[in-house]
Image (cartoon, rainbow, N blue to C red; front, top):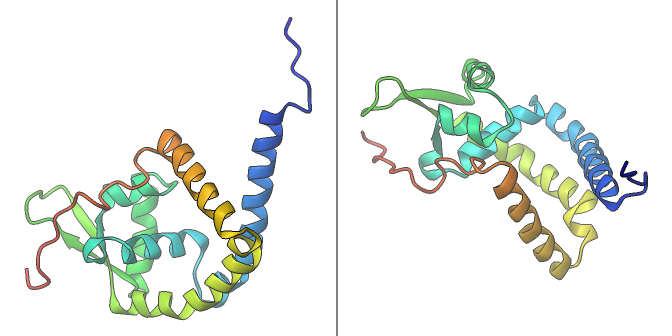
Length: 165
């Protein structure tokens, strides 16, 4: 029988990752709540804002997040009711639709981003040197690409029609 020691560095890595994520989430929760957004609302809106044409196929948006397609549908439904996002039919595929960031959604993001960036700098990136941050980001991308290969689905390959069509 192969006994794994309780202080195995793999267990330490997973524990530290969980502790860091939970800690940063707790530190940023207040700024989201003040803006009337949940963490998944913010993640959805910022992914739309950073996508070509400020829009993503619903299936790609679900693939980029931790939600199922039906879970993402519920999030977009809620954001649509608040006027922060809207749906747009796909001209080439009746079964597909896009989630699109509205001007109100962009305004809500613009209102929260200064505080959120201060939180990120205070509790995360500002604690690292520029070299440490660069190595850390490269490392995170390696891991993300292995465990979540769809995390950037639709972000670079999608052709975006003009805003008039």
